[in-house]
Length: 295
Image (cartoon, rainbow, N blue to C red):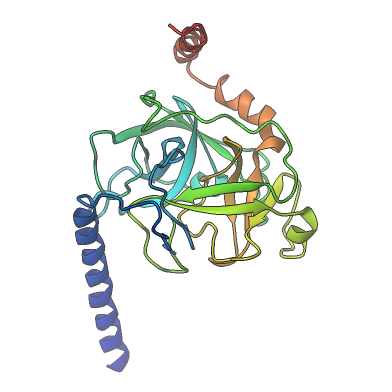
């Protein structure tokens, strides 16, 4: 009887928290960001919100096709726009997808539909043939969309792939809508965290599952700053390019392991443009020519 009472209390508390999250999201839609000098301390984990966000336009929310109670409650992973029709993400985000996926672009808000919000259906899921769920090897995938993302350069934009191997302690930014602490809630407005690429030796000492194509990142002065559950598949952006994909960690507030994009450049290029429907590929090439000529 006691255990049944505890279960009922837990169910009530969970529903209250979900209602508070929804009401908070509605109220927050009216809030204007205050002066940038204020030190935002929102536990990505330990993240912050810049007054001017120049990175959110590159990131998408990956969701189920239909939300459960309110818009955005089905977010579970993130991804990067690498072309108007191709999303780069982690294989573990989509390897067991039993339902239609939806990609939401054009907004830093998870719970609020804005005039810039774009919801797009996924046409194809391409997972690396060497992906191993048990070891997280080759944790990389592509989502080919049915329609192009409208890129205005402000709310939505493709990001370039990192082609250089960056040295340890390069400062980067990870961003997403992941939990603010282990088993905690997810934010409405996207969060950023600044971390550093760590030496390979540092990464190897912290996991027995460190293989080719992996890297790790952290802030040794503040391990609380990093990705958490719900940030998977999202980008680690270094020097303006997507350098890695959030792969796994052991708990929030610890070093996070990433899939190194530079190790998969050939795979990404081969499986993104060549796998598009023929007519879409031609249109994409024409668009790129116009952009290069400044038309």
